[in-house]
Image (cartoon, rainbow, N blue to C red):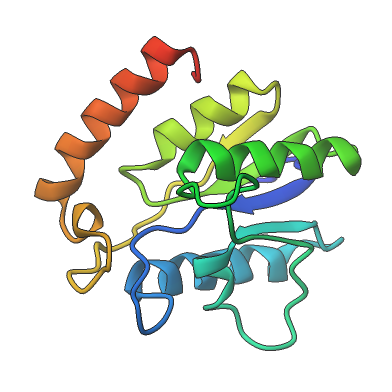
Amino acid sequence: MRKTKFDGIFCQSFGRRDDGPGLSNEVLAKLVCEIQEKCENKKPLIIQKDCADAFPAGIKIDKIISEHQTPGKYLDSYEVSRQCLEYCLQNNIKTLLVFAHPDHIWRVRKTLEKFGLEAISVNCTVPYDHKSAQIWTRSKWLFMPWEFFARLAYIFSGKI
């Protein structure tokens, strides 16, 4: 990775399992840890819970996003990004290095940018997890129609 200036690292999970973080989240956690290890000055880590669960013991995660702030509501990508924004505003973080599944990163990045944050995408290879508890994250064929309609919903609702 070329030298890039960023204030924090953000990672949205993808494809959780009922019995653990899942393959996709394990790969994302590994990639985030590899980048954090290369940083001269450790950057704040803002990580969604399913991915955070895959981090090795001893890695300090500054903010774990684990539930919607409105009780009973589904923790969707928008809400994860919104909670990330809250943390960034409280900690003067303006530029994020962003990790997400490659088929999900566009929406994650666009949401952060709509909130006024600079989002630098990390190009990475992350597999789908055919054992995911969320059927739409089990394969590209299941996810892409979901993502298409999610993008339309975000565009028409003004979320991006």
